[in-house]
Length: 140
Length: 391
Image (tube, rainbow over all chains, first blue to last red; front, side, top):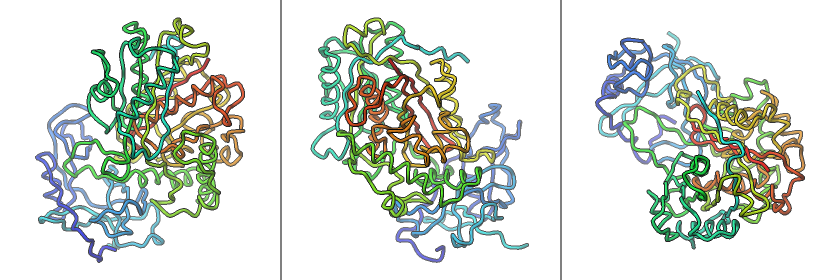
């Protein structure tokens, strides 16, 4: 499915000052996370203030990109022009403790197992952007 | 945290409800005029007697003018409220509180949504654009995740659970077939439900609620005045509303077998109403069956079934119209579709009919307490409303 070409290219994330580091990370192939520099709580999407301790001190941290599959689904309807039909959505549990919504690629539904090891990779969007995707982790 | 409630301090004394469906021939204003007119007549009041209005709509207009222009309301307070798919219930809740505090004597809560010619297929989307870092997912896809989660937690195989959710659709369509105001008025055979085209995950077409236009309205007064308007008022026992921290899709400890917001609002409502055993004390309920597995999880979150036992109760027929605790006797979102602002008041309309003995073919024998439940959002991130009403 990832080698088929959709009718419309996936639009670029439009980004904001808060999330610029995240999308910039996607463009250079690194999954980034934001953490409160005072209490250490992770937060996503990126935002200026910690919802737990109200600190505005924050850290932008490179994540391992390793995750396990928590849940997945194949949406059939409504069709979206930027996705090839048959695309999969996934909730992935990142090694660092957060959960993230993304796409699951390079695996047939029959071969999917809950808890399977995944790794991040990135696909290009329109206008030279990039978004994070997950696929079964290659043995390392 | 105080949540004192207003048990038996206000009553619904009149209601109106349009037929729900594809009203290409009616505008938002037309539907408001129809449901409000029915409510005035039901309470036997003139529009001049109503002191204030609460209008619930998510996408069919902004401000109180949507209602005041439609009804030609003469310089009275009209409050526009929105709270996702629980918008109609939120209009009623705030109207009830305004009466309970003594600010007004007689008020109307009215909900409306015009979805069919909004230019968008499905529910209207009112959220502002974000920067893309917060990924979006379709409603069927996120709700479909309840199914494998439930199967895994309680050791139910997916084939059995498909039977369970199909039976929920079958039940609600069977009830809707008996309701002249429902969008879909056909019984649907189980085999057709199970064979319907896939929408997302294990959800087929018949696991999803429809898309309809509609409006419903309630007139509310203080309990001591209720018998001025009707011999059979419907008294409000509890109204609870909670919004959650919206962390479920970001935290690894959320397991998709419960709506924590529903648990919190049910607990609050039961406390307000003095209910300790909802499985025995609630005679009937209208719950938010946007997708069939939602209803299954709600049965457990609302305390009608023990954790992990709801699927058996469904298969046993506990929640059928002729069972001990009918759920969605009017046909639910499944048969009515979901005109967002109207749905919560449509649920209350069934309570109104049932307690007055006016539910026709669907009439239940001597209900004692009824419950309505509205959910807005999805698993891990939602608002929840629970009411308890009775004689």
